[in-house]
Length: 399
Ligand code: CTP
Image (tube, rainbow, N blue to C red; front, side):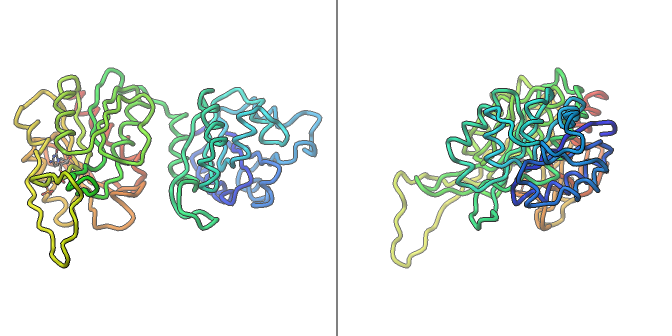
């Protein structure tokens, strides 16, 4: 991000301290960052902290700036490539949506002509309030981009969406503004993501803890690099990335049908979904009732192995699989690579803590058809997605 000029807007949230780390990471990456604070942000964190880390004065008092006659905040706005507001409170979102300008940050926002990225942080009830959601919709309709808050324990003790997104996720989103690539133009990806649900009765199902984050990150990065994506997803809490052709499904056989339907029109198939290996032989029409102390015996039958089926058809597609293993990681992944006739397999150890299924991070090994192994360090899933896309692109070029 050398020479990237960024304005970091900080508003009055308990998460304001996290903006310090964001600032530090951006400065390390070579960006020139100016910090602007809302009227009350200084109650959570001192402007001096941002001043010391950015190496520039912090604009926080609209009418008391050292050189207010020069409208310093507007000059800064004019020079920046990107305005990032992190954290953005419900109040700041409201001001931005309605064009109010009563403090340094909201004024700068109005004067700013470039792209805006907002990372909100607030109480869960505030986040879901129709007024806040309406303000977000208004800002989105003007092209403003968001890094949505994450679910988790909030400062008020409530558990729900509202926590500022992980700083590394915000940093990656910022980086994507400055490192835009269009090397996937004309390449059509079919990506599967998330878990599958195999119903037992109308209220119960068999599944696994896959969050879908890896597949959605891949879909997002393909779009960011100019490619086309059909995203087939089992049930997740994620929002489909903008611009993808989204095909939701529940059961493994539904996912298989969708893959078969779209396979012909793709160049690359990436099976990152954690497809259930077993489904119940019969589906109970009504909720199964407890019978005293008696247990319940379910007969499970295997689902179709989607990748194996694709391999048998020997189509002219580049095929990538994933292997989530709790033991013998590389041996098992290699075995799957061969058995399923894959070009690449991404192996990850689901027994390691802090990575894998629900995490924003992962640590994987990419193995290619020639059995070359590449160990990647722990990275955000978005970065892993980009590295995997680089490997896919290089194979496409040499095929
Ligand atoms: N896969 C698939 N269809 C299935 C099961 C898995 O296409 N019914 C795909 C997954 O999307 C993944 C790869 O096969 O890309 C490996 O999946 P994984 O669950 O690790 O392995 P399995 O082949 O199911 O073997 P096992 O569960 O016994 O390790």
